[in-house]
Image 1 (cartoon, rainbow, N blue to C red):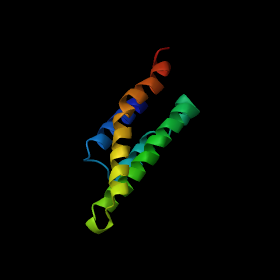
Image 2: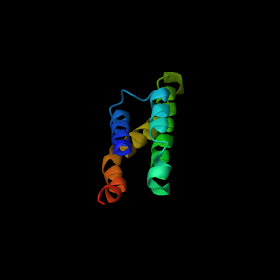
Image 3: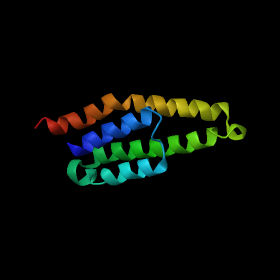
Image 4: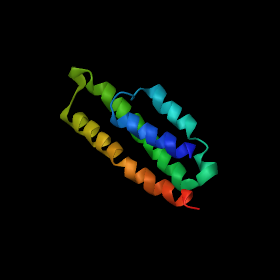
Length: 102
């Protein structure tokens, strides 16, 4: 399942800290834009949620790299977003598993 593999690869890249650039995030959106037609609203909404979290993580990471703009709230938000992505491996399996069983 290419869409599932793209989602897992994207989640992995977001958790390793090395691929949070906006082009990477936009590429994920382009690679998975057919999900609505293949899987319906549930998977499409899930992938859109991953995209939105990734955009926010990108923005927060960019901001806190400038020491003058770094705040404890933004550092906590970055940690929360990272934690959210680490939890998505299992969530993605749950979302996609019912569709691959048949």
